[in-house]
Amino acid sequence: MFTTVVLVLACGIVLIAQIVLWLIMLTLGARWAKIPGVTTGRALLVALIVYFGQTSFGVASVLYEPKAFVQAIAALIAVGVVIGLPVVVIRRILQVSWWQAFRVWLPTQAVSLIFGLLLVFLVIRPFFCEAFKIPTNSMAPTILGVHLTDVCPTCGKAAFGSPPREHDYPHEPLMICEGFHVHPSKTASEPSDGDRILVMKILRPRRWDLIAFRYPGDPTINHIKRLVGLPGEEVFIKEGSVWINGQRLEPPLSLQGLKYVTEFPNLHFQSSIWGTVDRPAKLGEGEYFVLGDFSQESSDSRLWQTGAPGHPIYAVPESYIFGAVTHIYWPPSRWRIVR
Image 1 (tube, rainbow, N blue to C red):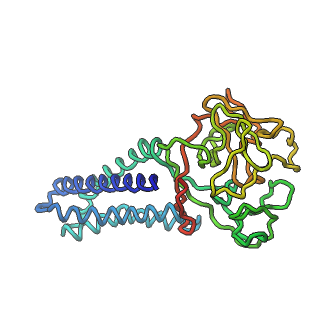
Image 2: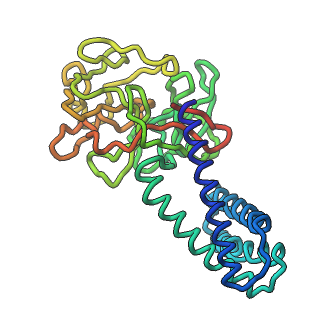
């Protein structure tokens, strides 16, 4: 709940700042265009209509991601929303000519765009929060990538699995249900898009958090996994549970029924798996051990074959971690607070 309050407050502050900026620049733009008698009330009305119109379109564009064949149409609509909407609103409310309306819009839009870009790329994304789209199902059923849906034959809950791919391991595709039962895939459902999540970078990750990080073997790739091992700990998996320094961990209630595995009969590097009783993962300062909730289908600290320079191949260095996952914000049916 705390993270939701923080996000709402941050969005409110940004909203007010953007509207105030629009109001100031509209007033200055009106003076530049030599439009007399522009009141604060009219300028504020223009700012509110244009800002909420453009913001709504921007959010819709991000969420719905138009297909390739309609992207050209979407681009034309975007130009209309960015240029046409403000000019029409300014002309209508301020009762000016098209040319005057354009002259009012130009400095307002330019300054607002620069401010928005600087805010996003210099403040919000590096230090506060960032949105990610999930491509795989290594964290199913907690977070879903592009997935098929089925009904669990064991408990009747919804089950999820990945669509077949040419490079899949040579075994029958698996699905995992909301009760963490794993069974072979028998579904013929159409694939559904993956979840979209928010990661807050101001949070210090805790054990059992979902974290976003750069893959140690290739820092250009981002991963989402569950943090289970902390610096200075020895981690291994036994009887489906995580053991830390020889003590069995009790997982959160939301993970009751989840069983981690350390045997993959179809893998040629079975003997190289980390986090087993025979090959425990020993973490140094600033190193973390992560696992996927869909244990049978997750490439995580157990299975990595390359690591970050100067660290064991199973370790995620602290400097590689972006932050903790706090919300699933899309699709609406999947909306939830993670932390």
